[in-house]
Length: 172
Image (cartoon, rainbow, N blue to C red; front, top):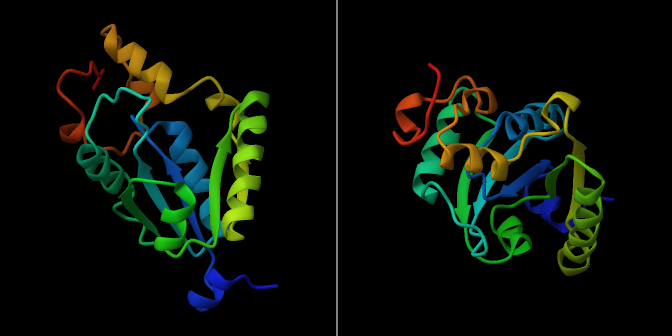
């Protein structure tokens, strides 16, 4: 049965992939690339998490992620504040896309998915991280940057190095 959001979108399957994405890693990129065959459009939604200290501004992350997907017309990148489920409705998402790295992630995501479905009827689709990316998180990358370590191996290869802050050590 088609939900109300899909009816508004003419039956298009639109997934919103929310996160702070500070930074957007190869694990995030993998989730988007693997989800593209499942959806007509993926909206990467950069949210504000007031509990996290960010390395980059929302504008920098917008530019960086848009650059990564510059050749993929089915990917759109936005910024939002407030509840994820409200942003999903605003951007016309019919699904919320999330990546799961470990069991602890699953428990957290399950609770959020059930709440979002109760509030909006929007279903959450979980994709498991590929094993080679399971150890990568934005938190770990931020910590490495903080201590001056090279983070090149954890960032998408096609990102524009001019958009990466000059304080980050990169082996390029």
